[in-house]
Length: 209
Image 1 (tube, rainbow, N blue to C red):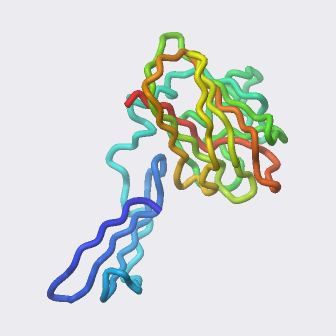
Image 2 (cartoon, rainbow, N blue to C red; image 1 turned 60 degrees about the horizontal axis):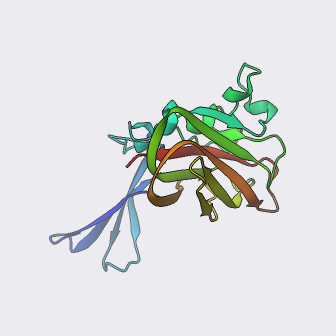
């Protein structure tokens, strides 16, 4: 669930709540209008608007997201997730294309490892140093493959522990830290759910601001 706003309509004596369904990277969001007699609820659905709420500016596709200019290497790739190339550096590009695809089937806008669980890794690198301070990680959509924890490793020698990722790809795990000037970053998975068969990411973003 994304942004929620609320207002009181005095003539109707109702609270009106607008809810958008979806997070960063979801281009077209569903919107809901709810009403309630009290601010604490209960709420009743007034109307549902399918794909009504396009984002005016998606941070995943903005200039501050430096992954859009990164080289990508991954530890493995699922056969269904391979592009038409045998060059390993292209296998993970679906995780850094600025798009979060909520389709639970394996798709071109995610990185899916080949049968990996706790050993899966993705590495982003740049020719020129990048000063960054924030990372977003989106788990694969669907409940089957779920990352419980991992670690970010940076070229400056620093590390940041990563806790459990939201499991539906509608929201991300955000990691913030003091500014780092780096030439590469690795996300290494070290714990997953029992049901996980093919660890991966729907999207990864690294921001300057």
